[in-house]
Amino acid sequence: MWRLRALRPALRGNAVSRGRNRRTDRARFGSEASVTQFILENTEVVSGNSLTPEISLRLFTPNCKFWHERAELWPFADPFWAIYWPGGQALARYLLDEPRVAKDKKVLDLGSGCGASAIAAKLSGSANVLVNDIDPIAAIACELNCELNGLDPFPSETENLIGSEPKGWDLILLGDMFYEEALADSLHIWLQTCIRAQGTQVLIGDPGRGHLEKLRIKRHLHQLAEFELPHAVRKENFGLTSSSVWHYHPEL
Ligand SMILES: C[S@@+](CC[C@H](N)C(=O)[O-])C[C@H]1O[C@@H](n2cnc3c(N)ncnc32)[C@H](O)[C@@H]1O
Image (tube, rainbow, N blue to C red; front, top):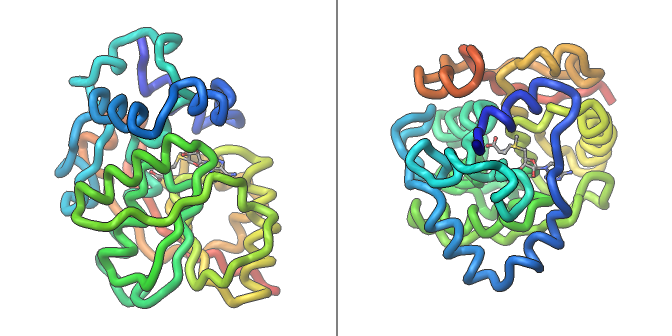
């Protein structure tokens, strides 16, 4: 049986199953139109069960076929884009509550998944938003979510940008991206480059799975907000009760 719980424990541990090769998945599945159709048929529009009821998203729910189906039958890599992660929820809530943070800014949502943080940034008046996820299906899911929320699709990038030349982002958003030590370390180094080069502001949404505590990056984080998670989100996240927004502010 396909269970999102199969993904969630992975985020508590050191490894996230990458499933299959993401590019090959997309190529094998066919055109963007057929991927779009697949997403439309296998997700449900959800609003109201998250920290940001004003944002609607196409997500995996118990009403979706693959929620109950054997995981091996799922044709893509693990659908992280079909979940609205608690870290992303906190980040999106914070941006909507504090619109000055993203207003007129050039924003990068790295590891964008369903795109909710990017959507919140745009609704708060960002000048432009780039979504980046190494899963190409996430870009299509994000386009559909933009449409649901009355927004034009964002430009998207599926290359791994970590380690690349910073492109003048004023604000980088990272929702639930600290689930893997190697990923966290590479982000730590690259984010410092972005800050040094362009004074980029970096905001992190994380529900404190315990992993962040152990990471080198933790001592450079300053808590900006903490949100109690709604009942439905707690239930799906193994007893997590809150999610926080952190300002990554290393001494350079
Ligand atoms: C736990 S999900 C979080 C999604 C979203 N930010 C949220 O909070 O709902 C992590 C996402 O990061 C993406 N990801 C992992 N490594 C990445 C990388 N190096 N660059 C960009 N995206 C990455 C995954 O494909 C996945 O969609």
